[in-house]
Amino acid sequence: MKPTDFILPLAGIILVVTLVWLAGGRRNIRLDRTTVDQALRAEGYAPVTITVADDGRAAMAWLEDRSALAVVRAMGDHAAITVPGPDDIRGIAIDGDPPRLQVRFRSYGQPPFAITLTDPETLDRWRKVLMLYGEMAARKESTS
Amino acid sequence: MKLPDPVALAIPAFIVLMIAELALGYFRLRSVRYELKDTAASLIMGVGNLATGIPFVVLIYGMIRALYEIRLFDIGFQWWAFVAILFAQDFCYYWFHRLSHEHRFWWAAHINHHSSQHYNLSTALRQTWTGNIAGTFIVYAPLPLLGFPPALIAFSMGISLVYQFWIHTEAIGRLPAPIEWIFNTPSHHRVHHATNPRYLDRNYAGILIIWDRMFGTFVPEDDKEPCRYGIVRQIATFNPIRIAFHEWVDMFRDARAAGNWRDALGYLWHAPGWRPDGNGRTSAVIRDEWHAMATRTPGAGT
Image 1 (cartoon, rainbow over the protein chains, first blue to last red):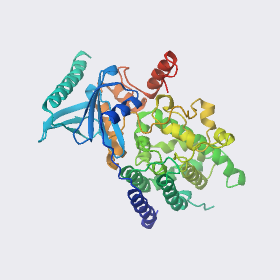
Image 2: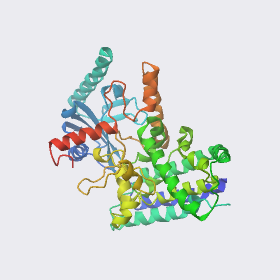
Image 3: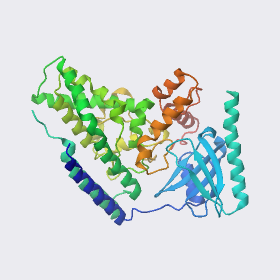
Image 4: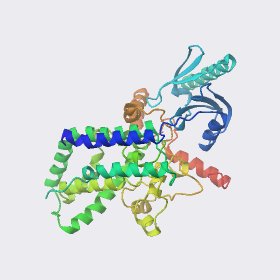
């Protein structure tokens, strides 16, 4: 294969990407309770508590039927759902103003998740949920 | 005999067909969705696949050549060899593809092709960067041993790749029944890319769907259950590096954290989702749960 063999594919990429952009391909989903609820139910989950970020870019939910946490991110025009197990969470942190709750995962396919919440009570509630969730993993490890 | 490279010849057609599909969606003539970052990621993966293949061309061709030297028959380039290689290559492809889904070591190389939540022609180009390292070409070893010339094998693999481009679309519904019965079609391949439990790890075909019918892995598309695309644990990134390597990183992390060699190797060998404690959620487990629920409550599965 010659270096010139890459010219046509590269030109093609630029052309297609430009046309997708011109055709409105920069759509960004804005999450709200309804879209998050629908997205989770479409995957077979039953959320009982849903909290959506103020900017509509992220959401968290508690799935009662599985006793599990779901994090939802706006990924282009889709809602990307992650249901991490307790041992999939590597750490949590709160920073910034307005406060932002950050969750880091062990999986390389899951970049850190961040959700901005101005309501301190909601923020604190989710922080506690995440800490308890992480402790479930620690308990499981110590009993195995 | 010098045969053309079907993929190189088809690249202009790939571009034209993607633009045509995009236009069908834009003018609302078909249900087609292209998203900017998703498309860019898929196309970069496609170019990366070409680039990462270069260092392996000599090695793989050399291995095929070496196997061809100890061939059982002299098939050559007779007319029927072109027909026979179509079936033989497609049979090998079925097993390559099935193994790529059923064993995590090979799944790590193949997962990126399934990582988009969209399903359009650009998804076809979201190809692996690590397939050669994973040694997936081993599955094709019987072809030179049988006596198919290396050039013919390369040609047939190119034809297979080109064929599989057009089936990555939602713009085509179902084709006439005889075609749907024999060939892999957009409908069959939508099922393959879906994460709905009933569709998981089904329809591995390349060109001919008959292999899935023969080996019990065929599932037809059900209009009552639209396909949801992607992977069971969706990745939350458009970054091509993460797309290409995330499963490798996760797999080796799991293996390293395993308590013993047996479990460590189990993470590489067993199906994606496997865990040594037996609580893993593999495709088979997810499908069984769905079957159990659908049997208990008819209609619940849809």
